[in-house]
Length: 560
Image (cartoon, rainbow, N blue to C red; front, side, top):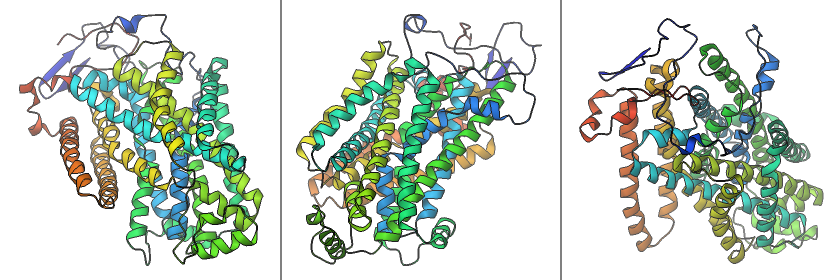
């Protein structure tokens, strides 16, 4: 078999030239000694879920069921406490007018997750592993640090979200710091559920998603939003009478939905099915069923997000602090002091959101809201920990014991989270959440650019490399999403009101943009802009085309 790119030829000497077109040859970079250590146990993959064979139908529900799992775990990132907070703020600030932004962001997310799943299925490697093999050392380390920052930011939101839910459920008896410790402890326990079987772990995540659907669905039925307004907001891409506040909120929705670490996570989760990657037909079939499963999972997550937006749009859009204060006072709520006696528009977060639901719709609404937030936080902090392990294993080629890896990835996030929980009041966390959203928005290029780069390289994806349409549309999507998130960052920085912070932000921006430009150059070369492929003079272009990563289990090495 031959693969050619920019005048370079890669050939395999094994006698497979006349093999079936449904089979690939096994070409792989030389395995490291550590990778051949049989005593090492990888995250999540101690077993592979078998896929039914000998089914010749164009579509099989049995096969879809076999592939069901990774997409739902991935979709949990679309339902984490940061997303829920973005949803309720969208409803409170813009009513139903930004539902179309949520729909568009979810569709874009689905297309990006498709690329992540295809990379994992075709190569048998997740994104962090491919980055480890393809990028030079210094960019690789910088990329790992940036992705770790995104994971820490996301993890802080998720753990704090659980702690807030526990605080609401205990009527304030469990302080924020205690809730953080409880969440960290039970996450350790739940993460080892895969010892009892991978499908049982996936069923547990499905149970948590069901709790979210029932909890937020209950609020939706209780509030009874105007269904006509819901549909209009979802399918009419217009925001009448919207200003700077609504625009910033729309940008925040995109930033909350499309999360960088989720691309790394999904590319790893798809490795959990027993697929013969030498068989082209099996790979095509896996790509098809994973896409269908991801679409279903993201549709479920979209409905849950719509529940939250619609509840707060119907009940609290254009409400003032004075109105909420009076209602809470009339119902005897102990949280009346959260809402000052003024006519400013109500501002809510996941804590205040539960309080106002309790004031207007009774204590049951508050407690059911808290249960939904707890399920969202617990499930997302577990998948976030998996992301941390995959990223660390892939970028650093770690070969530690399972417990050591979980302990390290948890410890990286627990320190800043505990500091926030100890020194910050549960009632004043909105500013921290905004900062964490900005932090994750800044890291988005470090997932989107690599995934587009590697899925466009024939030397990596072979027949499954992105075609011209996907290259162009993918490039446009990545540019638009990154531009939207950079706008969100700029808006946040301009609100800081400090010259020193402006100077620091400017200096950091120069270094940041230089690294993004490097990744973008690398990506453009992969997309076929050959006039930019001057890296061969620097010894860099060899990384983009030397390996055909088709069989993780093979020992065959390519001679160039």
